[in-house]
Image (tube, rainbow over all chains, first blue to last red; front, side, top):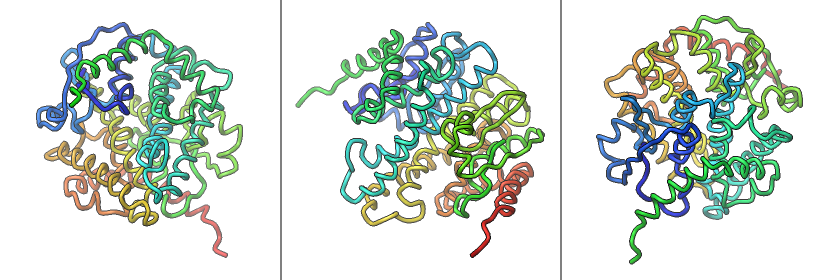
Amino acid sequence: MTAFRWVPPFAQGLVRDLRVRWALEEAGLAYEERLIGPEEQRSAAYRRQQPFGQVPVLEQDGLTLFESGAIVLHVAEQSKALLPTEAQARLRARTWMFAALSTVEPPILALNALGMKQPVDDGVVPTRARVASRVDQRLDSLAAFLTGKEHLEGAFSAADLLMTTVLRALRDTDRVSSRVVLREYQAGCEARPAFQRALRAQMDTFARHAPVSP
Amino acid sequence: MTAFRWVPPFAQGLVRDLRVRWALEEAGLAYEERLIGPEEQRSAAYRRQQPFGQVPVLEQDGLTLFESGAIVLHVAEQSKALLPTEAQARLRARTWMFAALSTVEPPILALNALGMKQPVDDGVVPTRARVASRVDQRLDSLAAFLTGKEHLEGAFSAADLLMTTVLRALRDTDRVSSRVVLREYQAGCEARPAFQRALRAQMDTFARHAPVSP
């Protein structure tokens, strides 16, 4: 699996290889990381594996996959730990994987472009308020669904894994922490030993490759 | 399948039930539409089917699914017309389905919040330029990958279906039309009879339910 050698602190613990590390840890599958930097990210050779130059790329048994969502789904299909076995529950869990990436995450990414904690500049204030309201609507809908439930579909699944990583992007705000249902949901998922191992693996890599202070 | 009774012209031909209509048409599966309006969208009963109040919802054989991406994948798995049969090619096509929704679409949605054609107001100009540049990077990467290819993976698949609907959101700009590879790719996918039937079905619904002019 490819991952970045180092990223600045604001992105540490959020880079998308975290999702794949977590899925592999839950599935009990060992993996090796191949670390890349900005030069390799832009190289023609890497673009042949990942047309957008992103991480992660997973190579497994001669197959090369990219897109964290697609990789997590592929890993999940190899493990009972990440998807229900019953057919309809399995499809509902997959629906929630798409909901995390297509409904909850995009407005969060748009908010990030406008300033996650505060407006990137005064001119974006009204636009940012509209986008923030969209984020809050999504979070309220999610919280309503999760009320009285520990997980999105049955036991912990790849849907919770993706949703948790999406919610983590709000860590510098009070949008999750102010919603008790979401705060407890995220905390419960992040308390899993597999998540802790995955996070530690990503953070250790960045620590090992931290630029030397001038 | 649920769809909106009517939406304003700027959204007509873009609402996400188009994806599901198209997939069902490609797969040769007949469907019935259940039209909803803003009241039902907000109702507790609809939220039990679709926690975010969006369209489409698909009901099939006692199973209720939401999220256009998840539904298209489910339909695609029922038809040779929408996914390769060979296992690795099938996974690569699925990777591109996620790429359409998680890598190409989010910056387009962010750009839309800032003004698709022109800045929503003068204050967002610098932020919009950054987001537009991200959209252009994604489009350039996609165009590079598609150069010399007619489709993302082998023959036409659910990946092309989703990617085409993502590119359509740029219809009021020259971002696709100025890139010959993408323009021809999109035109080729939209020329498919199944797409034409799906688009007509969505547009006919809106025409039938257009508000009476005052």
